[in-house]
Image 1 (tube, rainbow, N blue to C red):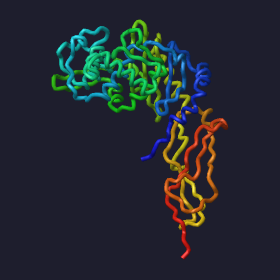
Image 2: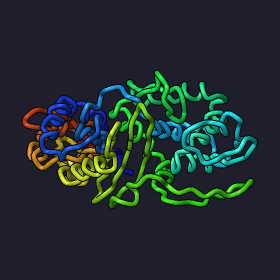
Image 3: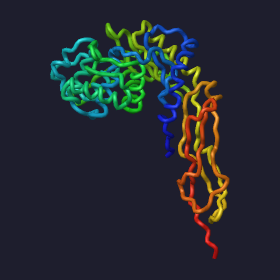
Image 4: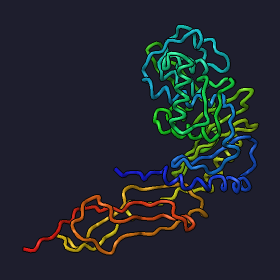
Amino acid sequence: MKKTICLIVFLSLFLPFKYVHAEQNQIKTPGINTWYAVVMDYDSGRVLFGKCDDMIVPMASTTKIMTAIVALENSRLDDIVTVSKRASSVGGSTVGLKEGQKMTMEQLLYGLMLQSGNDCAIAIAEHVGKSVEQFASMMTSKAFDIGAFDTHYLTPHGLDSDGHFTTAYDLALITRYALQNETFSKIVSTKAVLVEGPYGNMSFHNINKMLYSMEGADGVKTGYTAKAGKCLVSSVTKDGKRFISVTLNSSNRWGDSKKLLGYAIEKYNKNVLVDEAKHTYTIRVTGGNKKKVCAGIEGSLSVSLSDDEMRGISYKVVLPESITAPVYKNQQLGHLEMYYNDNIIYSIPIKSKEDIYKKFNQ
């Protein structure tokens, strides 16, 4: 299996260009009504467009993205959950759970993400965290682990509460992490489902209009409260590319999300920057049982870049003309340098693919 070259190192060197690009892109991007927005490349986590994406704001039911991933990582889908009085009596959007009702965790997760059930959120929190407050602490801790340092949770449902906040950037980062979980991805891309359980079956229909109105849309969560306004986190996969958009406090969240995702699809192409199969080299060996050693890099790297950015990418191979035996497999012999606008942004080791033994005269 191919090893993926560390994207974090690569992208950290792109970060200085993040807000420069954002300013330029605001001129070219169709007008949007949202106050806070971001578009992120799923594969790399690179921000392609941002509008006040580092401002701390409420997030409404997009909170449930974290609720779901914490539940998935700390419970089983076949766990049996008994609905409490607190869960059955919560306000806002619900799926109509009754006190004492028994549900599977899987049923609760579908109710949470498809129909935005606040009752499902409380039931999940009490089962996984033993209390809503402890579960919220788990959510905040998980956000920190992901790198969402400007996010803090007080509830699993997102109803307005002082001290419950995020940023558009953090929310995209959290969503990117969650989408790497296959079960989460399956749930949020489902339009309608009948979930069976030992205490009865339940059917759910997804209220996310993006799934029905944009080609390639595959998630993830809506949200609304008086303080947060209309919110939407979306994902679209098309032509081998996947992008995540976040719009918070938008007067037209569906239209804004389509514009932002359409912009990313049109402007950015998935480019293979490093291909293990193409970067192979031979080096002359002196004093060995073979005259040449085969060398190369490990792994491949694909990143969504605009055409202008791709034209700025160049490479330089740094290898000795010859090497003296012995040479050992995986021994570093040189490196491949990657440049962006003549500035080095990454250095990839070139290693021997075989052993070359020292030749002894007989």
